[in-house]
Length: 344
Figure 1 (cartoon, helix red, strand yellow):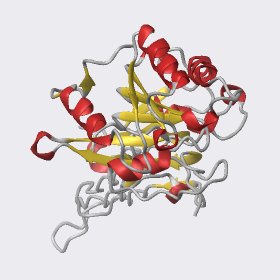
Figure 2: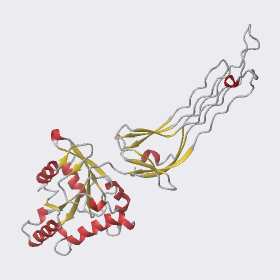
Figure 3: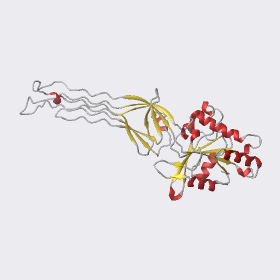
Figure 4: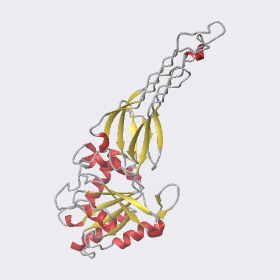
């Protein structure tokens, strides 16, 4: 099944049940007072976040959801049953928006987080509430209030700590598989990766970080070209960007130009992305010696720009221990994940 990270649905809370008009009719009280019970409240629409889900696929085929209606009240002061709440489970990182204004209605950022998005209608009062000294036999009750219907735009933004960025075939999927237990599809043709992949890099007893492999960007991605524009939003919440450059493009290609193109595409999508802490990984060094003059010049140029640069080979594992060590050394525990030692 295709990965779904954006969908529009309609959700409606339940109607409240109407109050009851009733009078006591007992053996010795043939004309007793009013005893109409209240109607039950309509069910609410509740959102809950879970790490067990990784996409919005559950909402791809079913678009309309409704909570249960409250039951009407009954005689003998019997309260109507409340309508059943509608609980919609969504992946952590789901943003709920108004599709017309893009106003954020909910942002589910924590596992187990719950939010009542649309409250159910209130049940109406039975006629016993309306008895007065001048009207001891009210023959009316209060109807239940109607539920509310909303159209909701669901947009998933991964809650990853590190975003892995690069052109197609730069080796992002291979690197993810070497750093984590993730097993993304790996092949030699462009756009092998058609959806973001997540993996967890553990630091032993010191915790772990989530890495998101974003499908390959190309020039013009921010304007809708290629695949990357669909998934740029998944790096909005990341704390660190690992920019992967393919050294095998030498000598025919200006790899530094690739680097600037990637940053321009991220900046065109959202200027805040290029202000995130960054590290450049020069991949496929198993095919080029580190003493190669153009490799040395590339590293020197990037370092003069204030960037951390590390030559690696995702295929052979060259440089990966140093990469893990660098990430661990700059990991800072706290309420919010941060990598303090990386330039922006």
